[in-house]
Amino acid sequence: MEQPAFLFTTRGTKELATKIAEQYGQELGKLKVVEFSDGEYQPAFEQPIRGARVFLIGSTFQPSDNLMELLLMCDAAKRASAKSITAVIPYYGYARQDRKDAPRVPIGAKLVAKMLTEAGATRVMTMDLHADQIQGFFEIPVDHIYASTIFVDYIKSLNLDNLTIASPDMGGAKRANNYAKYLNAGIVICHKERKVANQVDNMMLIGDVKDKNVVLVDDMIDTAGTLAKAAELIMSKGAKSVRAIATHAVLSGAAYERLNDSMLEEIAVTDSIPLKNTSVSKIKVLSCAPLFADVMHLVHSNKSISSKFII
Image 1 (cartoon, rainbow, N blue to C red):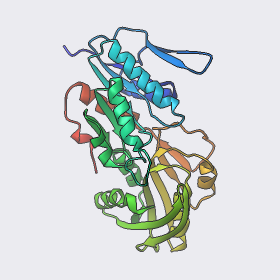
Image 2 (image 1 turned 45 degrees about the vertical axis):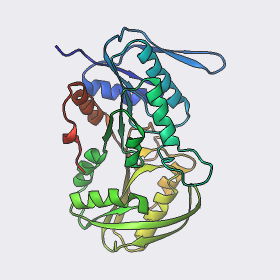
Image 3 (image 1 turned 90 degrees about the vertical axis):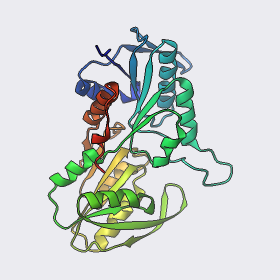
């Protein structure tokens, strides 16, 4: 008889984890976090997990406390003799630091991978990494889920004629091309120039969008500067409409204001990161909970997850 798995969550991801647990078919496990007056905290499992498979759910968005809490939970599970420890990380923070692109800088994505492994994680499950090669930073299995499973159905439900998929930068061209091929749509690319991080200095459009309904595809929205500028450029070139889909709603700084004031008709994101501001009506949240719950069931049963990869 298959031994049941246990699901636990960090405090920052409790809303999503609760949905995942409901879809999985069981309640979240009992875990308490003791907080000390200096800000230090200590998670503790309040039920035996010896010899069990545990799923520790936690997106590592800012502040870094979310990452630290997940690491402490991994260590606690290891010391409690859990047989298998899967770190379920819907949003993998520090993923943009995936290479040494300047002198004397860290490779943050690699460092986080090492910390998770050292803390006791025996498997990692995540969604839409900023760069696919981050999987190679781990010496343990990585289940890299694609949000296209969610977004493709959403795009189809819009019933848009003259559909064109757009990438807001050159780095996302492969992702946009995969969507375009699957949906039998055209593709355009925005080429941007930056002198400093989070600030676009210049942008040009490669391709034709006249009389097209355009959907911008990205893995995350941070300050929303690129997305807002891309939407403005696309509409200035004669597009009928422009929307956006992005897996991770980081939304820092003035992002909410930029999106609200932008030419975008709608922005669809997943709930891998909880929204700090729910008053922007343009933002539509699509839950990734059913997807993660399905993959977790398959992993626990030692079954293939290839059916969950659309593009």
